[in-house]
Image (cartoon, rainbow, N blue to C red; front, side):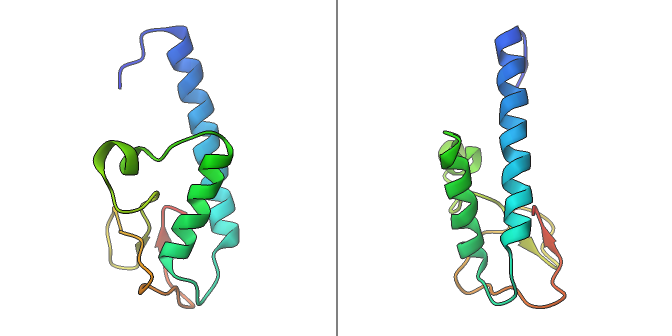
Length: 94
């Protein structure tokens, strides 16, 4: 996205703040034994509380609201009810 107007810059700053808050709260909320889908749903609720929408979900039809990659997954991990967080997991995007 190219920013050419002041209001676009202000909007990007606000969105960046909301994303930062969402990631921080998701990191604090994550616990051993929860699924990545549960964590994704929590992140979605935070975004919605700020009136924000998930770009991957809305613009590209991504099957989640956040990308949650665990361990060997490099990026764009798809949230799943079967993917359960374990002690020592490396979670990207939190």
